[in-house]
Length: 416
Ligand code: SAH
Image (cartoon, rainbow, N blue to C red):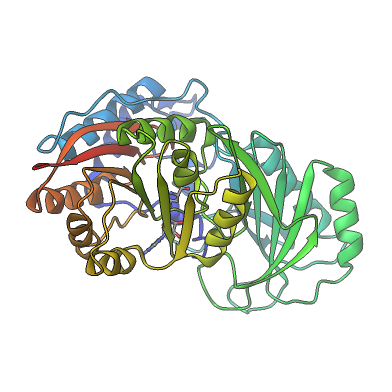
């Protein structure tokens, strides 16, 4: 899977946009000129933090209300778990590079457009990552590196992606370039590392296509191991540039702990971790399970997952690169069974094929981790129809100041 342009944070449906605009208006203070004063000078243009100027307690209330509204017909919704320090929580930062009036700029595309809005520091991004991006921007002139121009196709540097393992301090910098030929490459890497000794790996990613995707397929490791590691719930995870990894590790630990608790594992169960990414949930759960099967579409993520199992000395887990729906349908076709299914699909939710297969594999317990309560509600309807009932929902604020909310849902088979 390619990493999508920053707008991954901005997908939304019209109804929710309207709700948040209303609360935004009421809460935003006015400055001396009578204009709205925001915590961030570019918040309106960027559009990533729809709730930034709403007091945090109120944001949580609003998310709780939204989830309750969507899940009220299915199950009890428990109080949302918020953050103590809801700023600078994002461990992954992406900046688009461009030019304005002869000056290199970096930032985000204005919501719904390809107009670049310069960003110096962001309220939700890791501060160190923002500093590294700013350093790179400052180095371009002396290295005569041109930023890429989307219209003409000229120029070299398109994007910079920085990922930091909060628990390990390891930092990955991905330089996304339009051409493989990197002028003064070694000198550039040396200077960048001198200015930021905390960087543990630097990767050049080639993206020479006209696309809104950030990362291309080809990569070259310029420095270090080509991945970083982080620690979650006592397990170590390697993360490569193209693998999915939750952006808010502080909240992710709470989310995973709840997901694993909801599974009610005793040490005997056959467990499926569908949409497993780098294997996080399955690896953490494996210590309390008989055996675990992880399924993931992205090959790089599966490679990380296999490495992660070995690194954590887990022997009772196997990973498969496949479409989760197709894999489950094959399992069901072969009459295979499982006791517990974890599922953590992308924002689009899962498929009827997947749910249909789950009901044939007959787990007593399904744990649905969702980053989109709308598609979650849609999928729960299908589960209900096919003999499964949601028993409880736990919202977690993984994305403070944005409209997004994550949920864990415990779903059980109606007739044992
Ligand atoms: N459970 C992991 C990853 C969740 S994100 C974690 O907590 O880190 C969703 C994952 O689903 C991504 O890794 C994405 O690559 C994968 N994915 C998307 N569509 C898929 C499909 N059809 N089948 C299997 N995996 C898919």
